[in-house]
Image (tube, rainbow, N blue to C red; front, side, top):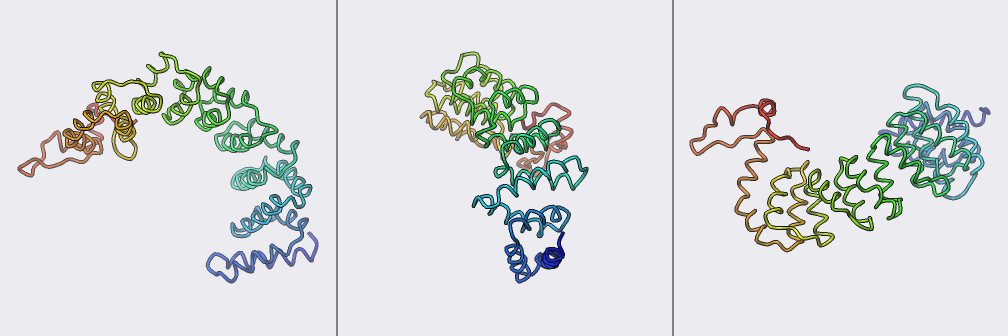
Length: 312
């Protein structure tokens, strides 16, 4: 690093240390970074990887602005290739390097992007897979639905399923819908897939009803599939309430289907559902005398041991 650049970097480092709690220092930090030439920014970026977060953030902000403006793309690509060669580093340093590469990925040349995608895919960790999926999903040149589908079939990673729902053709979605129903644990992914499919086989309807009752009701509402009052009540009985439950979605679907009589029955049953939710959360309500029974006072873990149903 040239002495003139070293002096700037030292001043940027000093500003970064005070920028956490001092607005004036923060303003100076970004001003000093703004005074760097594009070549100096790229050279300083490597040093910033071991610097305080404020230093790294200021350099990254400048790099992203350069990329969006189409400035010094060749230098950014050179920086990217240099950082790809450093991804063998262990520990926190590698995490910072790969997070940095993930941010500047759109501004790298195709060969560098391909090398980075291969690096992330070959590593086999969940973090690397997440970066690979995020990058390839938005890369029109290098995107391959077949590669994403192959990865999902091997991993059942919900993020890959999300990419499939967003990017696969309706014909492919129709073909793989039974697989998605069987391999996904997220009802919203299944519902989006089903709504994009050309058609839904009866076997798929049956599978959705068994695994995702609220999603089944939602799909009935969105597609106009008929639902009997008895089945609507059974679906709501099968769903959990609360923040982690999906009963609200099922009730919404019943309303969309115009099943007012079912809503009226649910209104009369609201105390029963509320008590059930409290029991599941380990909360007991006193009886009319103000006392609780032994079974009511049983702890949540003990109830689980006795078969109380948990959140899905």
